[in-house]
Image (cartoon, rainbow, N blue to C red):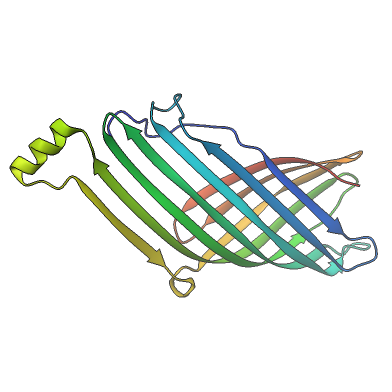
Length: 207
């Protein structure tokens, strides 16, 4: 669709919680995020986006980091991502619905020094995705011209991927800061399969 910017930045809000670690050797985390804008005029009039993400993970402590020993943990998790991107203006519409199921396993090594915790880890990710797209032209003049020259005025299709062919190895690392009841995490990651760098900055309340 012409006129859309190649990139744009839009803030989102995510809720997450984690419980455990008092007397249990494992903890459980949960997170979710939802965004729904039917008409993002900051991008283009008629452009809409819906995004939903929910999931959780369990981490088990192999070593608790006592004395000079580091903290070593194993974790597994599952996340679901779904949404839709659409455009509808001046008799032309297009959209894609997508859904991704992601499972992962990871090992992490960290060590706490007073209130600073550097960490590094390796993560293996498996995902299964499907996407359905469609487009149509309803403007009478455009449809008439398309019919005259033998061009289609609508179409649809789909694409799918399975867990079997989607393994992604990823390394990550960063710093965690614990200040009173607040925890700040700054991390980065690298996707070896797709050569993609990523980053994350989070702030959460922690007891």
